[in-house]
Length: 363
Ligand SMILES: *Cc1c(COP(=O)(O)O)cnc(C)c1O
Image (cartoon, rainbow, N blue to C red):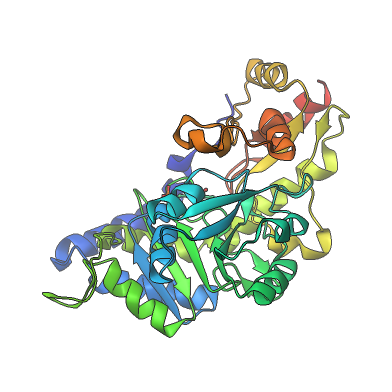
């Protein structure tokens, strides 16, 4: 069986370095907000090209804390793409604000900028762009809209670590960026982890306190903060893996380009990418669309190829968002009914990639 993604095998590429990093933490006696987190924050900020990176407990908290840091609260509206992973909406709801769903572009799967303005009201405070499946959203168009209506631009970069757009990395393409280091992400830890990136001095200061009980200084609390810290072991592991991120993303690109060139089956719609901007995609997922998805997925399974659906049910159809269940979002629904993610990773062998292409072309 060709697994969809083998995180164990990816981490084993760096086994010695990861073991050394963990041992160093063990021996340091400092397990929360110590040297490793500080160094990772510096290195990740430098990598993204921003002034500040702030380690937090996970990607959802990263998003939610950015909104809180900007004072977004009950009564406010935040624009989000309708076909995102539900975490993007939950971050808005956690702050008592209302997520306002906008349809994606059917080719890029990213938020359709042409459909944003009609959803802006006097209560709109921010746009959360999601660089879905690893591809940077149409930022130039989004910046224009945000400037016109004075909205914050927040990046959900949980699937797009290291992508480059207009000479800048994700995390540096808006007012603030949220990253997840969940083990299966392009930069994955050995547990939960997340980070916020920003060039905003005030926001960075507030977030450093908010993630740690609202405290700038031990036992002095400016805000009713939360406990959302990146721990030392995860930071130490992430420092090792950050060094290989560009190399790994390049390997993902090679797999994606092979698929794009060699999959030839008119039942299978390949993902769209503007090849003049190929660095703007880090291929967290390689997502095709197929009319008869169940049959196609079973066919691949029977030929030893594991696939996953990202995502089978759109947020507005979830029980958790019953207030949105009656929305009509035909592009989003079409995407959720037809998408299927093929195996892609930095360690997928040529032999496996070849086999996957052959099996798909024979379908
Ligand atoms: C993974 C993910 C998140 C949430 O990250 P966690 O670390 O699991 O909280 C948010 N948004 C998107 C688009 C994601 O893929």
